[in-house]
Each structure stands twice: as structure tokens, then as C-alpha cells.
Length: 411
Ligand code: HAM
Image 1 (cartoon, rainbow, N blue to C red):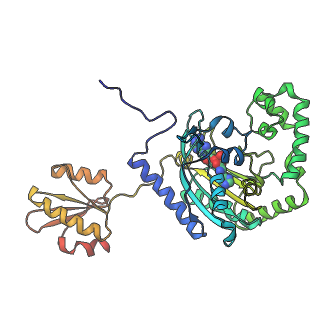
Image 2: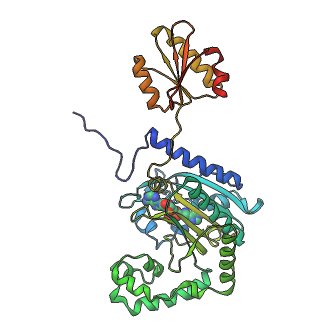
Image 3: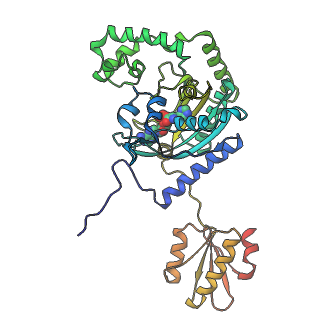
């Protein structure tokens, strides 16, 4: 027998029922974005490798270990996008979007790719929903963007979510702090995990992320960035916190919060869910005031986030109710099938969702099928012009005129 194929490691197929749940999540996000004036955009699934090396940062795990990089037939190095912010900033610069009214507020969703070790909530192809507000350094933008994700989590009813908030300060303030942190790490080098020790000078902040026992002990005594913010950064952070409180968005300050991408400045945040295991972050993001300048554009402050579709669904534990069909048309006699086709066409054109039996089932089989497609009602066409309409929830039935059905269903 020929060998059968499987979806590649760390990837998965999304079958109809699961797809319906995703659509619901997306629709909720689309509503939230449009109510706040964020427009959908889409960028390519692959970009120049340099964009991520320069944008995300050479010392990050993403660039060091996780990128799907390949050479195209013209010898160019391309990479399947591991994240969406650098591509959106590339598009902002490429299309001269700094000439538009600022900030430019955009949203996106789609597949992203990271060569990570697969586990629950961590895949090699996953899907993000994200939002970016580019061109404002006001704390108002921070509060608005963070509120979008808070609304998404709330409107979907994701349980057990906590918002953690921190600030990395400006690049200059951070540089001074990093020197102090490196001195601390070097002074207790032998207690650190090998991975952290190797990266003391490259990326000392990642030490806060480690779950290695010795490293955690060293980090418990480490100097904290929040105590080293300069005055402007501290004031910015205080305003963000006030605005979030005014918007009734609850948060906890996390002085050790760090993120896995190098472009962040000032505000960073993370929405974590206690229902998820090791991969507990539903979504997160922050300010990246230097990124557009780094990518050759004018100095432009910006803030945004991305959330993982799979993590949202895991946290909801399939609690998203999938809507069913408005109507199933069953036939008592095969001679009624053409009539069922015509009626289904007419009702579908009028915007009503209708299914009919395509498999020659018996009446009993058709009623079962109506249940499977979660039809709200079933119309049973009988001899001549007779028809019965059954409410699938209550089991109540009544005689109806098929010609008056449209009005009846619309009511
Ligand atoms: P990130 O923290 O790398 O940030 O990813 C955002 C979210 O994507 C995570 O919170 C998680 O839910 C999901 N995610 C990441 N990797 C995986 C994976 N391997 N499998 C499943 N889900 C995953 C960013 O990507 C930034 N671009 C966010 C941002 C936007 N910052 C500013 N603007």
C-alpha cells in the first residue's frame, strides 16, 4: 500500500467545526477593531531574512533558532514570517505611510511560523490576531491598544486571564541598566544556567525568563529596570497606568516582565491565562519606538500586540458555541426532492441558512442529519403541498404553507 502522508510536525489541519470556532473569534476581534477604527491589513507570508534579523534582533531565540529560512531561485534569503510587527513597519516605510494622518491604526490575522519544539499551545505554524497603532507616543495610544486585547479576552469570555504590565524605558536608560544587570550576572556566573551564562553580554534581560532554579535565585536579587526609568519614561508609564485604571482595565505591575523580541521600548504587557500550561501567554506586546527608524524610516513611535488564536481556543476549552443552520429541509417522499432544492435556493438567496439531504436518507436519517447540523428548525415536505415545521429545541410541530415560509422564518 502507498505510504500515507501526515501534516508536518508542529502543524495541524483545521477541520470544519474547529474552523467555525476560529471564525467566531475572528468576528469578535473584527467587531472590536472596527469599533475603535483599526483597519485590516495583510502582508506577505515571507520577507527578506534581513528584515527579521534587524527588526526582531539577532540575539533573540526567534532569529537564532526558530526561523524557517530558505533561498529562492534567485539566490535571495527569505524567511517565513515569525511575527507581524516588523513586516507591518516595513510596509509603513515602503508606502510612505508617515504622510497619512497619525497614528495609522491597523489590525491583522494570519499564519506565522517558528521552528520551536511543539507542545500544547506551541506550534510551528500558528495563527496570530494583532493590532498596531503607529505614529503616536502618547500614553493614550498605549491605553487604547491594550484595551483592545482586554476587550477581546472579555468579550470571548476567556477565563482566568491576568494582564501584566511593565516598562522597559527608553533605549538610553535601558543601556545603563543593562550594564548594571550584566555586572550582577557576572558576579554570580557559576549559579546560572549554561544558556543564560552564554548570553550575559548578548541579552541579559532574558535571564528573568529562565525557569532554572539557580538562575531564579540570582534574579530574585537582581536590580530592577522599573527602578531605573528616567523621569520622562516614569511619567509616561504612570500615565498609561492612570488611563488603564480610568478605562477599568485591571492589571498587575510585573517588574521582571521581559519579552522575546528586541524592539520593545517603554510599555510592555502580557495577558496570561491560568488555564494554559507552560505556554500561558494568550497575547502580548508593547511599544517599539525605535523600530521604524531602524528599518530606514523616519523616527516613529508605535505600539501594538499579537494574540495566539490557538492559545485563545485552548483557554476557552471549546466553550465557543458554534451557530447552527437556520433550517433543514427534509422530504417524506423522494418525489419532493426537486421541490426541496428549489425552496432551499430561494431561502438561501433571502439570507437564510438552509441545508437539504444530499445522501438519499430516510426521513428518520434526515431528522438525525438536521440535528447534526444543529438546525434551529426542520421543514418536512409531505405529499402534495403539505408541510410541517418542527422546532428542534422544543420538538413542537405545526402545519405550514411552504410558500409563506420566508415570512415565517424571518419573523
Ligand atoms: P510574541 O509574544 O512573540 O509577540 O507572540 C505573540 C503571541 O503569539 C503569543 O502571546 C502567543 O499567544 C502566540 N505565539 C507565539 N509563538 C507561538 C507558537 N509557536 N505557537 C502558538 N502560539 C504562539 C509578537 O509576535 C509581537 N509581534 C507582538 C507585537 C505586536 N508587539 C508589538 N506589536
